[in-house]
Length: 213
View 1 (cartoon, one colour):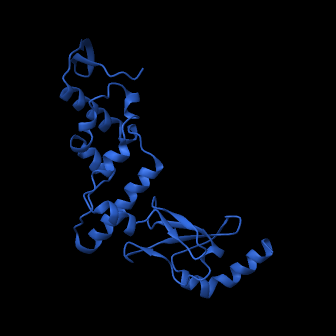
View 2 (cartoon, rainbow, N blue to C red):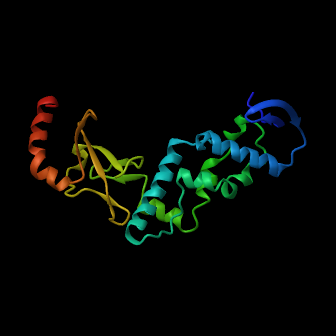
């Protein structure tokens, strides 16, 4: 049923020879037991969403760019490893009503983690590592931060009029472009859009014209 139960075990080496249920555990003891479970099972025990994983990757990108330049960053380390190491600080205060596995899914993990960003970093995140980028066609295309460099998958014709590869993070990070056909099939991958227009586009245009007259 996924209910948490505490017990005292008598062991000889690794062999359990007796068990005794424990009742009346205080909140602190139970919370520490829950943290131990999360450390053993991993952060996937918590209710992550794809959007929250993208948010985590956006923060990691900006932190990494800072550290590459100056070995320090105002962006906190929110990697899985660091989150697991600091569960007592950010997760423990929210475990008061968690008494079974299913209760983890009721945690507002997004708010819990987003609260770890001090002001004004949440606003800076939206500017420096935006969720979407507007292309010349007017479309707002979602950026995929799950890989490095981040990926912008966009139909080729939507970039007509754009000479250089888009950058984010105040120009510090170039995006990787996954150029797509009108049917959204992969055509080309590049981080140098200017060179693509000069050297590759003519052949790609011929190929696309044959398939999409």
